[in-house]
Amino acid sequence: MVLSIVASWLVASNAKRRRGWGFWIFIASNVAWVVWGLHTGATALVVLQFCLAAMNIRGVFKAEKT
Image 1 (tube, rainbow, N blue to C red):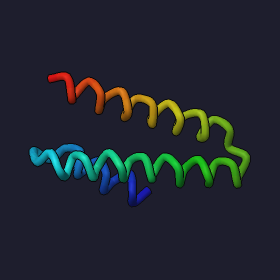
Image 2 (cartoon, rainbow, N blue to C red):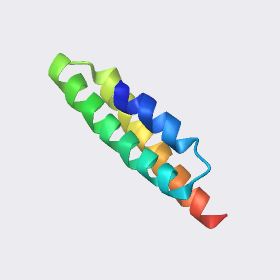
Image 3 (cartoon, rainbow, N blue to C red):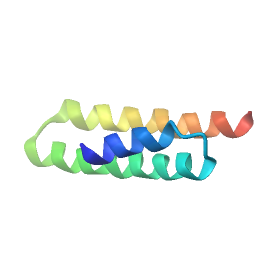
């Protein structure tokens, strides 16, 4: 959860480097949540994290075009 909060803070930054770090921390957060979801049998959590990761990756590609 802490990773998700830190990533949100960094992604909201005006500095490109911090936003980049935020993206990678979000991905690490997604991985951590997937591991936890698999451990506890929380299939919905695992699916949610894959969807959130896909949206983060999509956002990076859209941001690079502008």
